[in-house]
Amino acid sequence: MGCKTGMSRSSTPCFVVLFYVYPLKFAFTYVVKGFPHGFDQYGTMPDGRMEHVVDPSQAALLMVMYGIVRGRGRNAGVYHKRESTMQVVNLAEKFSGFSEYWSPRIAGELNGQHVKLAKLKGEFIWHHHDAEDELFFVIKGSLRMEMRDKTVVINEGEFFIVPHGVEHRPVAEEEVHVMLFEPKSTLNTGNIRNDRTVEKPGSI
Image (cartoon, rainbow, N blue to C red; front, side, top):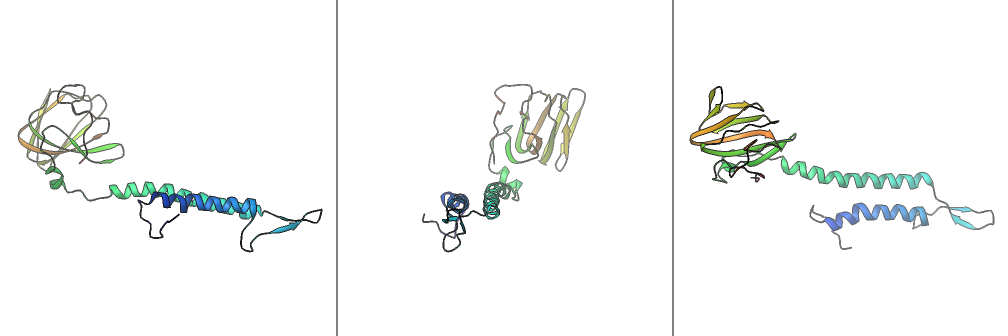
């Protein structure tokens, strides 16, 4: 098939042949025809003919080995995905990659949560989230969080959690960089949909 032993992850056809097709073909060939090159097992039939005799235990072992190899092939994709997400994230570098205000970017995800980065300036809209809590962690600047019954100021290096159902409005007098921790289902404008709604945040 032209497969090379020094196979890269991108060599999908070779991977399929070596780890899926060959083991299954080998096991099937053994069950039907016996091992080649002197490993065939024969038995004497009642009429005197010599026929191939399948050893069920060895055939089963081959199929189990095939299952293990196939399972490893499947897990390799999962491992590759985990490996690709296990990276050190430099926040300064990420923030330098976009300039839009009030347009969060997804920088990571874990346990059904998105880690988002956003640049804020000016006033946002009053809104609330029916089911999601939001964590605002200020990386740079100072953010004012207005709620109907009080206002808090979140300074650089501090975070504040807005519980679900609480109406709020973030306000940034100067440019503020924030990191958000919130469920994947969270919409930036919550119960409101308008021209400031970001339905599908981009990744960065």
